[in-house]
Length: 131
Image 1: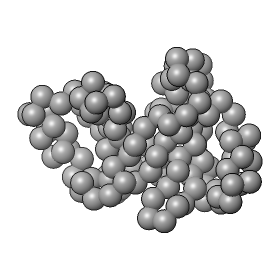
Image 2 (image 1 turned 90 degrees about the vertical axis):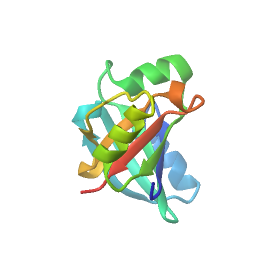
Image 3 (image 1 turned 135 degrees about the horizontal axis):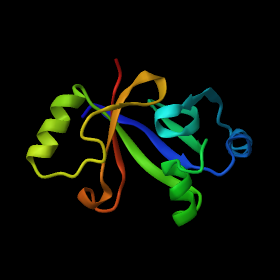
């Protein structure tokens, strides 16, 4: 585990959320569509980490389902790892439940997977590796 990479926040409307965070003093570094996750995202740097705003781009998006069930708010905590395949293998051998046993492509082209909240005391944990 290298560092906390970002905190993901589910929002209904990305443009409105960006305006809210700009009023708070944040600056958006980039906006990106992530087809594999069916979301549009905006990132804002804060120290060595970032905040990621996530808006569903389709009604069958995991973020859309999250918003229906929980409303807007913190969705996940992302941790940067050195070697995601090794980390996945280690976690599976330890009995940890993963949402994606094979890494998927996330924002900025990272390899990523999620650890199921049942294995982390209720927190959705993203593991990401920059290429």
